[in-house]
Image (cartoon, rainbow, N blue to C red; front, side, top):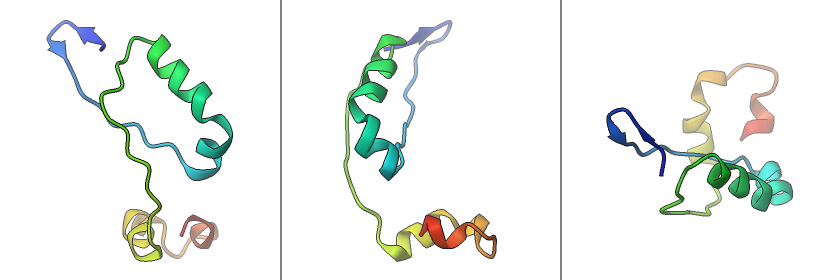
Length: 68
């Protein structure tokens, strides 16, 4: 795990669906190669309702429909 001046930190990495389907192993390798330790993984598919909540700030924009 990355250790900085004040010790260890936890962070969240979210990989978007298309990217995860194509580059999943490459992305994990890059994360580990940069000194991070993967302590947990969750694979899930968001419902339309959850995606709408997550991307709420983009509602009304041209690309919003493609997000949800």
